[in-house]
Image (cartoon, rainbow, N blue to C red; front, side):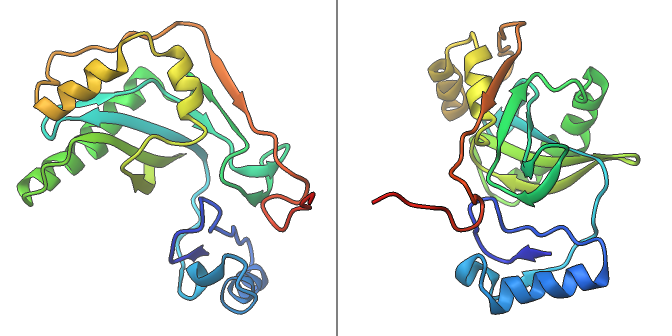
Length: 205
């Protein structure tokens, strides 16, 4: 159950039963857990698997993937608790194998960019796909036109190429042939949040 509006990455409630779904609708539409973002809701199939963040840069024609990363959105250990804006991330993500990366590029990222171009949209910049890696393969949860947060932080620690040069190549339409250099070491970002997050938190005056 999703709030049909922007909720800072926290507008999804995972429902295992009909009672869970009814409670989610109550929290979204009556209690207004996410404010006006929950005035309308979207009901989607619950996908089982591991969530990964797949980011790439594009100049409108060429799609160049960034290193893999994985964000952990549930509030508590063991992938439990409510969804948050992200409790931490690391890179690389072992679930994104070279074969999976190639599949996502071919089946998801490149078709999106080419479809935008065909529709007259000359999009240049970062394209972010939130994916669920299911037993049937990768499924798209969302697209964003920005770097993921907090996934961006471990990625920037590992990036050895000049980010400005890459962005200028996107702007100028000359991304073809570019390669990104990455530190082989892993990087991790851990989020410290106030007690009660992602719900109401204690505030010190």
